[in-house]
Length: 290
Image 1: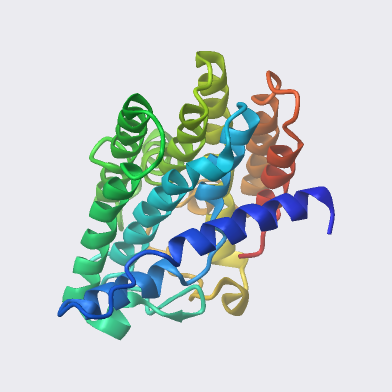
Image 2 (image 1 turned 90 degrees about the vertical axis):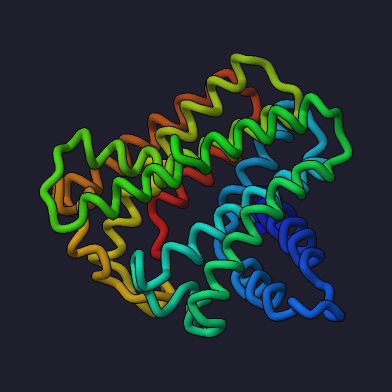
């Protein structure tokens, strides 16, 4: 493996090991809730958000191992959002990451509660980090701001409200800036905060994440049309009734936009001396097939 692959494997292995340590109590009457939470939390996936957090921590001079509770917390928030997104009242998906969605296995009520449990546990997990209270408070502020009504949840509301409607370009960008980019921004900025980084580093992380998030979502919309369902682990063509970047621009222009946003993301890293990993990550996400 090359240097990028080695670093990615180190991050992912550490994240998986950390996540596997949560919700293991087998002697409590609510064991089924823990099973539902672990079912989705440990279902694999790219782990992009925790990886971004850990790498920005390292890049800003911090000990990325010490930031693992923060990485676990943001993955819990991301996983909760996927469980709820898949529910019949939202996107109504039967498969996620190649297997049945949470509500198909544990029932709708338990899936809702599993998501609730993961969201709550995320903030408890932030508080377990062995660092100063000021850092923890800053991490809580970044994550809660990105996940709530002014971030991911707000974007989901706008996404649902816009179904079967024709939205403007600005409206589509706003939805995905909140629904997708907000949590990616949080991951990058939480990494900087974990390392006690500078304001310039925080701004660079924000700009990188903003562009990366847009490229990621546009590629996601392309894969819903062009992707292989088997590789993606879920059905394609599920967004036909939504306002996507493909419906807005067409596949050809979307491909160009992914390239443009990826270049913009990499340009934002100019203040760092050792940003090759993040450059490669952005390039690989731009060409991903799932």
